[in-house]
Structure formats: C-alpha cells, structure tokens
Image 1 (spheres, rainbow, N blue to C red):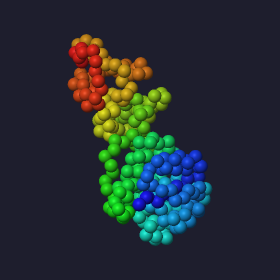
Image 2: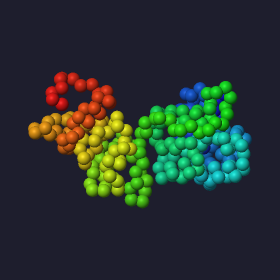
Image 3: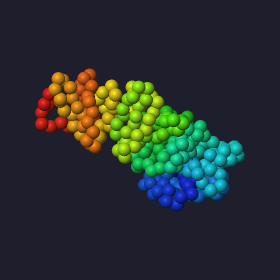
Image 4: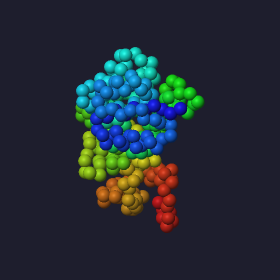
Length: 265
C-alpha cells in the first residue's frame, strides 16, 4: 500500500518541488495539493491522508491553526497522520515539535535531507509492512545532521555545517565564522559546542579553535614542535601542541588519502 500524502503550501513552486520529489518514490501517493488552510481542512476530512506536508504561513489560518482545528474534530485518521512542516522560517521549529510534528524541513533543503524525512515517515507509519498500521514512534534515525541550533541573544539560529567555517573561543563565548564574513556570537564554551559537531566534519586544532575540515588547506610545522593551519580563505591559525595526534586520527577516520610520504606529520 502507498502512503497517501497531502501537500499544503501557498507557493506553487514549493508544491511542485515536493510533488516532483515524491513522484520518484514508489511508496508515496499524492492525494491532493492545497494552497490555504481552509481547503486543506476539507481535503484532510475527505482524503484521510496518512502524511501531511504543511507550510506554516498561509492565507487565513496558519499551519498550526489548521492542525488545531482538524485535531479538535477528533478524527482517528488525523490522530494517526504524520505531519512534516516545510517552511523557510527557522523560528517555528520548537513550536512545530511542540505540535507533535514528525519532522521540520527548512527550505531550501537537500535531497538527502528529504530522503531522511521520508525514511522517518516510513518508520512512523510502518509502511513497509503488508498493511499500514499505526506503530509506536521509533527513535530518530541515526543520520548525521546537516545543521545545529544555537541560541544567540534572544533567538534560536540554525547553523548549516556546510557554511560554518571556523569557531573561535573567547572566555565564555564562542564566535562562529561563515564564508560570507558573517559572524555569530554564542554564549557557550567551545568544549560544549564541540560535542554537538560531527567529528567527521570538524577538527579541534587548538584550545581556542575548531575548523571545518572542508575549509582546511594545509598543515605545516613552524619549528619547535609547533604547527600552523591554513584555511582556504588564506587565514592562518595556530595548532595547539597537544592536538597534532588528534588531527592525524581525525584525518584517518575521515579516510582522506595522503600522498608524498609522512614528512614528520
């Protein structure tokens, strides 16, 4: 059986994008597309979708208002429906999960991230069984995240790992540097933040610096057992005396090939 899917978004291109991606999945069936909350409420009642891709900001009631109204009708099909919010606004993430959303897709998203969402939906609905039945929600898939959330001032900020270039410690703060020369100050210790970063993508090279492995251009000795690191933008950073061995292990774990001999490094 296919997963009956309803797409609710006031932007035609956003609906087309989701429909195009879903068309490549054999176990999903689009039963409707809606551009506002009022028509979506009718479609949910008529089509009883098992999966709802839902925008937040739409004409009339927003996505949260829509969920509240259809859940108030106490329909069994609504209680069993998987809800995935799809929006360009990161600030609604906590509210979405408070509304028991299964996932939160932040536009624009990658194909790999979308596939991870579909896998989560399949697990939630048990769609690979002979009959679709409601099952207990499994723990999140062990998929390496592509971003993290940090608190800066009075806002929560979503930080994509691909854009994060460098983290620098300063007392009880850390400064996040991005390729666009944008910086973001976060009240957190660098050691705590390091635990939230994927070890295969980031390197702690100094007590005060963490670098994105993809931004690392070179590592070279400067004498006295000390080293320097150069980033792709030309910025040079010191390598702490206790970190060379850890860096070698991180590079080996990332399976980055080395040529030209060890050279003492």
